[in-house]
Image (cartoon, rainbow, N blue to C red; front, side, top):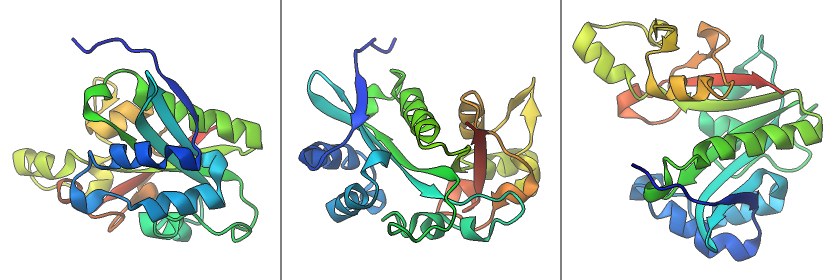
Length: 212
């Protein structure tokens, strides 16, 4: 049984950087963002940087940046590095006709990961998009069940795996959780090879979309 905790999600400030880096330290070393990345994000789009705190401690951080989304033209989403400008957020004014918000990252200390914070992070971005008048929220998700599924059931294209459902729900655990929050896969063209290094996903990512 996971404990019920009181927490709040709020916009981050530079004073939160030590707490943010404490959350980052929970990731494997090769997946941690250095402090300069968060400093740059706060400078370029502070509205999209949120922290979650409980009892005065920062226990989660999540970020987003503006982008332009056209379902028929996905060249700008061919990798996480491309759409996020290597995680630094696009420079202010560099996006023509921003009409969407892209959720860049989300981190939660392990002991709080089943306390509702993940869902609260998503809804902070949904609400931000609404306030900014942006019609769409997107995120790039990995397919952590893909490699295992192929080992156990035989080879299958990533585009087919990402659409597999069982009893009405996605087979992939990440897709299943995000779909419950309204982030869905529009079609096979939103399954992207080489999106982000992830052996369990065979480096495939999926671009999930929610209309705000």
